[in-house]
Length: 184
Image 1 (tube, rainbow, N blue to C red):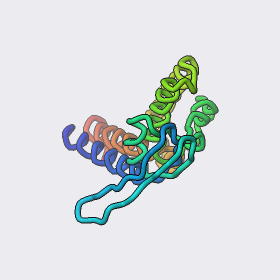
Image 2: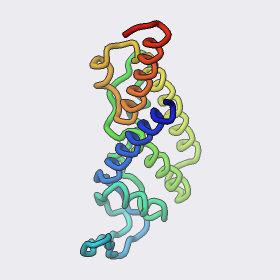
Image 3: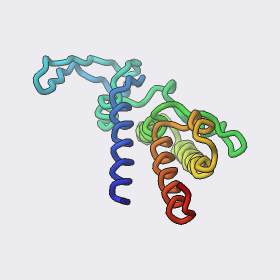
C-alpha cells in the first residue's frame, strides 16, 4: 500500500514539475548568449538569442535552468519569492503562488550565481536561504494542521506541491481512522 501511495505522490509532483518547466519566466542575462538553434525530435529548429549582458528576456523555465546552470542567466527580481516567506508568520499563513517551491529553488540557486559574480553578499544569500527554510517549516506545519480542517477551507492557500502532499496525508489519516477507529 505504501509503495502505491508513494508512486501516486511522485506522479503528482512530477506533473507539477513538468508544468513549471513549461512555464515562462523572466530572466536577466549575466553573460552574453549567442544565437542558438534547438532541435527537438521530429520538429523544426527553434532559435533563441542572441541575448546581451543585462538584457531581460522571458524563457521557458526548462531553458532558464539550462542557461542558469552555465552562469548565463539568473531569475529576474520579478520572479522572486522571498517576499512570501518574509511576510508570512504562523498567525497569518497566506496563499503562495503556483509552482512556488520550484520557483523558489531556482531563485535560491540564482543567489549562488549572484554571489559568485560578486553581485550579492554571501551573508545576504545565507539569510534568504535561512528564511526560506523557516518558512517551509511553518508551511509544512500548516499542512499537517490542515488535515483536520475541511478541505475547501485550506486548499485555496496551498501550492500545487502542497496540495499533493496534503491529499496523500489526508488519505493516510482517513485510512487509519477507517481501520483503527472503525469509521466508514
